[in-house]
Amino acid sequence: MRMNSVAANRNDVRRVTRCMVALVMCAAFSGCKESAKPPAPPPPQVSVIEVKPGAVTVFDEYVAQTQAPSTIEIRSQVTGLLDRQDFADGGRVKKSDLLYIIDQRPFQASLAQAKASLAQAEANLVNAQQNLARNSRLIAQKAVSQQDYDNAVAQERSMTATVQAQKAVVRNAELNLEFTTLRAPRDGFMSASLVKPGALITAQQTLLTTLYSSDPMWANFAIGENKLLELQKRLKRPPGERLDQAPPFRLRLADGTDYPLPGKLDFVDATLDQKSGTLLVRVSVPNPERQLRPGLFVRVIVPAFENPSAIRVPQQAVQELQGLKSVYVVSAGDKVESRQIVANYRIASDWVVDSGLHAGDRVVIEGIGKLRAGIQVKPVVVASVNEANKNAPPVASTK
Image (cartoon, rainbow, N blue to C red; front, side, top):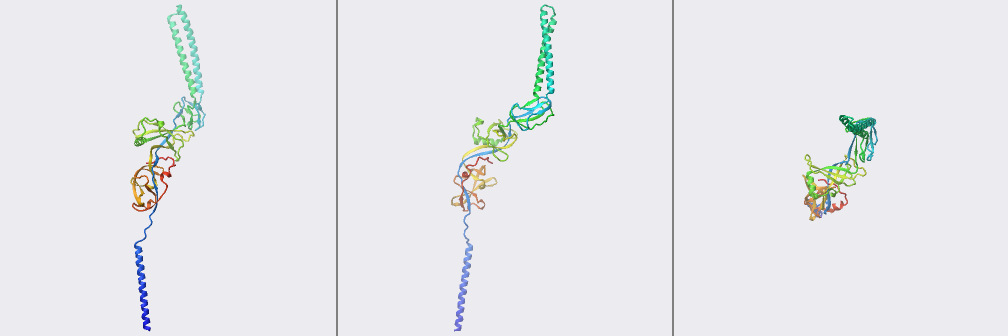
């Protein structure tokens, strides 16, 4: 009985061992199988937009400098000592307002002397006229010689000419006295005075100050030959079109803000500058609040062309490599493909696509870094770029 019990226990141990070995082998086999085929990760989620054509106006920017249409240098026409300045530096003046007075005393003395000389010449003329009248009566009676009569005629004519010359001297002295008072030739704003009372002023040489007009203001800029041809082609404007029919122009100030009032094309030079290959263009801008000053550097925003069915994509969706631009497009089956595009103009943060995309294409705008051509993604559609920017103000483009 004891031997049979021992044998039975050994058989039980063998069975348990075989079961454990089998379980371990099954577990090992199952683990190897699972590690060989891991579960597939879910497709990455990306944000896309459905591009839609819409109207867009493309603008160009040019660096310009403002200029007052009327810039007048104030100089004296007589030489003398400056007696008084009668305007505030930088102040506004109206036409005929007093600006300067030059010491008038020397000119008053010259005028008095000229008038005295005139009076003497007029007295001599009266004497010559009386003498001529007397000789005219005597020559008829043959009481004087012909020589005496001829001398009387010549004396009268000489005195007449002397009176006319002295009148001219008086008029010149009066003008010089008037020139000692300098007045504003037109409305405008004064620059700082370059001379102070007591300074010696040289006629037609010493610059006293400068008078600037303020409304309107000009903005001058140069446009290149290539850009000129491009604009003419895109705008397709007839050669005989009047300047006042051109579209409005806008200015952008140095701090990045837009000047509120639009300007109009005022002047286009007739020929290109042969040295620089550029054409001078001028825009006239209203300036009632004197926000613009002469000599400011501004940017002129010029309408380049209009496209009624343009496609725009955000700049963040465009990849640039060696001058080529491309975007990721989610095609049928939610698979990604790389699409090369042509885009030369940018409006705000969007590229205007000339070719490479069509209406309804789904362009990836977020999650680009984890993409490669051919993989499957989970696209999430956001607002189209045209809807997001339809109320945005016009912004100049960059090529």
